[in-house]
Image 1 (cartoon, rainbow, N blue to C red):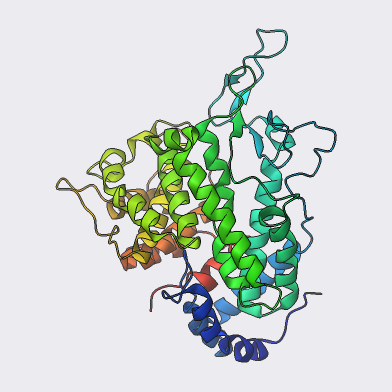
Image 2 (image 1 turned 90 degrees about the horizontal axis):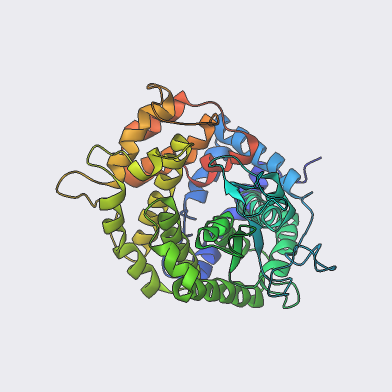
Amino acid sequence: MPHSPQISTIVKSVLTTLVLSASICGARGDGILIDLDDRSRVLEQIEAGDADLIAARAALVRAAEEAMKVPVRPITEGKEDGKRTAPSGDPRDYVSLSPYWWPNPDTDDGTPYIRHDGKVNPERYEYDTPKLGDMGSAVRTLGMAYFITGDELYAERAMEHIRPWFIDPETRMNPRVRYAQFVPGVSDGRHVGIIDTNRLRWVPDAMLMLAESPAWTTADTQGTKRWFSEYTDWLLASELGMAERQAANNHGTWYAAQVAYYASYADRDVVVTEIVSQVPDRIDWQIEPDGSQPHELVRTMSLHYCDFNLRAMLDLCRYAEGVGYDLASHESEDGRSIKNAALWLLPYMTGEKDWEYKQIKPVKPHMFYQCLRVASRQFDDPRFEAALDKLPPLPDDMAWVDLLLPPNE
């Protein structure tokens, strides 16, 4: 049985923590990707009997119960015999195989690997990527569930994941991805591998939510901020980071989004300002005047990548707000803007238009939900919110969108 208090008890106990939340999160009084202050409105609507939000809360609890079962697997796990360890010999170094590269059928040892865009080599799952992804997903879900329900068991379990990955010196992941997306016979690590740590998206926000719990300590704040600050430094100064920064497609956008996000959590506003102030140049070369994204349209999964790149740009709008920079309103003289990119993609997301480009795998329409809700909140445009009614219901592991990214009032 799920262990969660009754809704009326939740509302009373959680509302009393709002002042504490503001003091933890600093002068902004909110999260990074979300507004923590939205919680009071959502909980009041639940208490008033809003059936949709009650259902969303129940779905989040179900997802959290599943997340409670996710095993704690630090990056060092499974490397005791030296297998799957980075060339550095340090088991704390992240290692991943590039997803779209496969053994070469024309050579005896299969090297050099060859690329098949959009087709994932299952060998990838033998390295650190699943561990990073499982931890990030579990911490996100448990942090969000704690924030909405006040159930301390969720917070305590989340901390069992966070401390081995970010704080404990023997198991803490080295804040770098020097050996990410290696390709046998080609490279022991590539700049495109930086996108692997996009699996940490939402983790800093979850940490801000968990900071209300007695399970969270001052040492946890210091340790996690230190980790994200050090990773920010590596992204900015390393050869791989500088190369990824120049990527013309979604890799470059997600590089910027990651740096701005981690720097936001680490209280490094100067870095955030530098990153978001350069995004208008990226908009100019990534988005056409009609809103299309040519660098993503050439991919074999072009609809997926258009949504993926747009999601990063919307995140950057949010980070820009945190340092007083209005990125959402930027539009070039010939009409290139993030909003126009969202409007161009809108009828394809809802199925009103058939996708005219290559997409070798079917997309899951509910994956567009988060992007549309964020666009609705960011641009305060009813067209994005209305489009959500045309999408299928959210699965349990995405019910949090309605609770933590509610529509604008």
